[in-house]
Image (cartoon, rainbow, N blue to C red; front, side):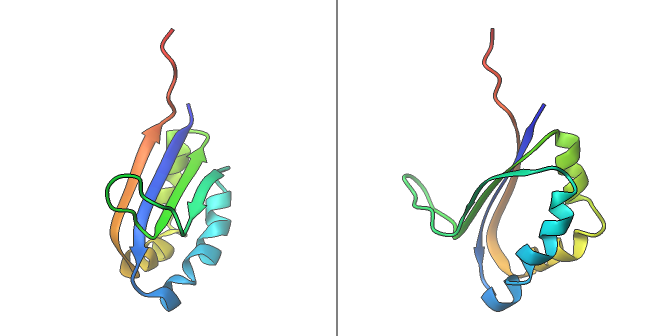
Length: 99
């Protein structure tokens, strides 16, 4: 069953953060993701909106966790954590309509 990584955060060190996306993309692509949302300008209808909002669909929750725990991703994860604030990272399963 597909699983979704939902990320929301504010960038606090823009220049250092600029290395994050190009560095992590080759690692991410190993896990057959589908990037559904990657928005640096979302608007809030309710609550506080973060600067960066991303939704990535993975084929399985195992693939999502394998990406997140990939040793090659670790330095980029640390870079993201060091250069951002107000971070939320969620794992959500795909909704299946009850029959």
